[in-house]
Length: 295
Length: 295
Image (cartoon, rainbow over the protein chains, first blue to last red):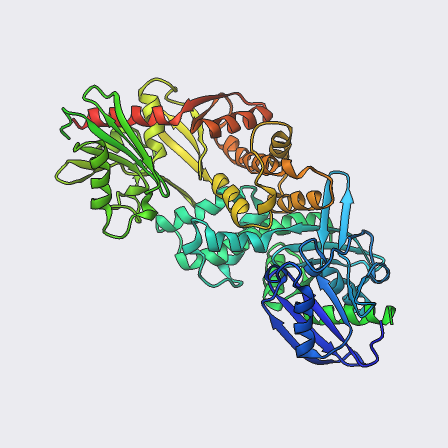
């Protein structure tokens, strides 16, 4: 990929996309964000959607990651198996437009009955390793619609597990019988922490969710606390899965700061220390390293 | 309530309502079912909605149960606390129209931090007891949008716990990233039973749900099995809560036959025997006994 004049990095998800123009030195020169996630692009509409990005950021080579490489995206970039590091991603880029654009493949974990897939987070995780922000054998969580728990080994992604925490909260808030209870603020505090403790200690998630409604109906708990409590409950159940996988030691929480802050607070309830790493900075680091590898 | 010429029994839920005309001897003379659940009735529209039932079934006294007595229904009939039997319900009927109509109150369970509420199922459960179909100290589950696990003692509802199993499956099938995987048939069989086993043995529901998608994407599990597997997974997690509450012995599964059959199959995986009782017959039995008590 020839990017002597710079390149465009795109994090193209299901419902949103973000793009940055990087100068020849890798510094951010411009950026954009809109709601043209892959589900908003009609079949056969990716050439036009990509042209829209270049109209705004410049006629430059593009490196893309995320759901744009899924079976609903521009083209399917097959998953690379674990263990996978940046060099593995670079070797399996899916090239388009005569090498003027490339899609980063996702990663698959497949062991016996268990299986998992990831698309997009891998660039952030491995970018942070390449930059030296996190160690090559770190344990991480990456909260979002689907939280990813990741174990690194030797700078590569060795194993990971997805928990549908963010999506579950959205489903409950938008479509469930709890919807009108969950419009309150979600932030660290006593209600959130009580939820985390319940989720960590008990194994009755689908029952406890209804109890939230019952306690509100019977006036036993403030309605305004329900959102934070349910968020804590789901994150507590999530931590139980993740901490069982990553073992002892520091956990890195990577992603959007408002989410990594919640996970850091929840990890504190579990007696674990967490360090937050900004997902956007890590994504750009990952893109820069990949682009250098294929220069 | 004077019902020498018969009465109308109504099971009025959130999204549906069913009504039966009972003759002076209690036998069913006519019935109807439509989608005018309480959410489909506009504010102040219950007189008209009730008139619609009488237009179809006759100008008779009415005994109503279910969400019609909730804060979103016709009038709120306050919960009766556990332990509660038929006589407790009869003593707390909410009378309307100069005793020409009555709403059966719901039941609340409230103990320390725990709380739960029920509206509608109580008539079925206690009707079956009064009829002698189930013993006065039975353990039951009542699957539906919200499954109820119930422990009877001395013919009264002593304790119960709600699990959001049915609603959770609907949310996943209609609105989640798993939606297009879950349109297959849900019936007892190997995929369903594998889901039940996972739900009973493991404590990672929100992670295992995503694994279903990953296994389908990687071709490790047939897509057509996903619906039955996820249904089994949710029911297995549900059983873990319920069986912890009701102890040893036979479990009665009461409700709609297509659901009680699934729960019976799931209980068999857990090594438990279950007896199915038809919920409609039990509802009508409960209404008849209540109507006799206030004749």
